[in-house]
Image (tube, rainbow, N blue to C red):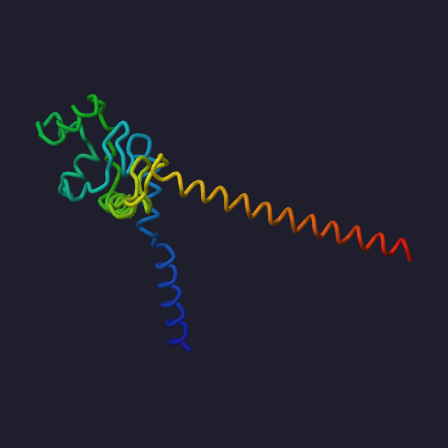
Length: 181
């Protein structure tokens, strides 16, 4: 009996722990939305730089320090921090000393999940203004195609009108025969 209670408590504890553990991407998205999205986008620069690929550009330790206090790095003479500060009109990034390492890792995981790759950003069709190979614009030397197209459409319309006319003639003929009888 005791072993069943212990087993039940064990399963209950594991279930509660699993439920309590949140999804890192969801946590990262939530923190990013509340704290970062006003000045940053993942794939384009706003008030602050675009954050796509930040982990490849900077070390994790540097990112932690910059997020917690960018001005400490700027005042300390960090070249990368100064360059970013200068590039974005000397607008200081707000300090976030309360973010834990896990919070920042969750934000970075979210950024990585939202980063557009080159393949994803390529349109499945040619850009406007670029002609596909083999395409020819309307000109005097290819007017024959358009003339043939126009005449074939006109012929189709005439055939359809003729068919409607015949059907209408047959209907009138039937009506006269019915009224005569």
